[in-house]
Length: 453
Image (cartoon, rainbow, N blue to C red; front, side):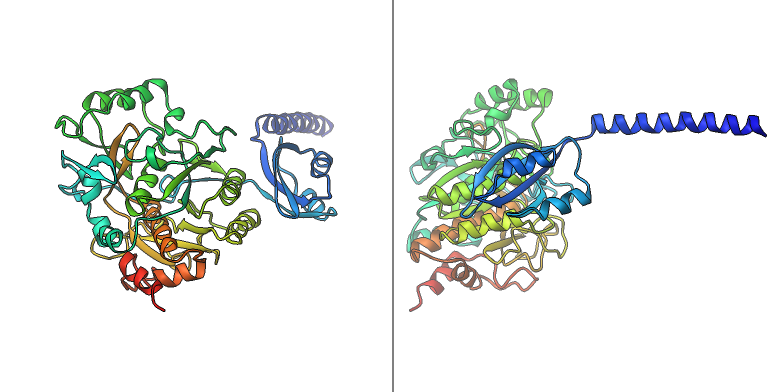
């Protein structure tokens, strides 16, 4: 019996050692935890961070508070978080969440269908669009006709002010966009000169896209499905190079958003704010900084093609900061194809946008419900793509781009337009009654409402 006990004690000892080794190994290789700490201005936030073993990686001031991006080798315990939140002057403490663009997140149900693009996408001629020679399909696409873009331009104006696009960046050399861009900022690198999406590519891929700027009339340029949301027109040689080196899954997203914003508001200026990496990922802190940057640097509209599943105090604070400065905020309702609340679309200072097809039916992938104040076409749209080329796209991100451009047009008609008036104007669009808000975007109907005495 004593031998059995001794043997069991020996086994137990080895199990204890093994358990401690495993725990140590897990701690060694655990992914650092990231948080946002918000404190009153008269509080030393860095000192608070040090007391809890947190490392400050960045900070940004607010009106009466300062926010700090902080990290820890491993997540804080519930008890530690509770004590930190009770510290004098601490306003909030939350996870610095990682998120993705609406089209690259795992829950997205978007599926591109090359056959639905129609002949306008494969047109090989060019058209003049406000001083730039562009793909004719970009100008003549049904999506812009459905929202009555050209009619609105003739009757009321072509947009004004600055539209900030928080996304993956923009191809600053694209012929359709380069003349309407204003300086932006790259929050992923903390510098102002790297907002071009081409900076995120493998050099071979970047060179392939840049040398693919052959004439649009070249019939050797095939339509190629790049991923579940995007079909691009590229030269055959470019396709072959990209097949060998690959493209990050969200590459081009910001340029595609910018193209659709420009299609609706061709005389508005576009501010590229790069908060997303080419793989579609971003941190909450970079998005918050981008919203505040836009409000502080002359943006009148902010286009946000992303969403969180739960509210964030820091995100709401940034949205309030922008709204209080008269900035109109527009956001995607998401692509998981269900009735759900997402943020920032659900904040009352934001217009949430769902997607419709050309039959004025809710897109199968579009969310609906409380986050969806309005809707716009979001299937088989033709827009700009890096390398001075064009793409067909699907997703609520692209519906959001249409409504962001619309906000610029409305603001031109009614300077100083506020969010509630923007929402009321959008309600006078085409009524489709599918839990997608009161109206699908119709620029002419909405502007006529705004012009009523």
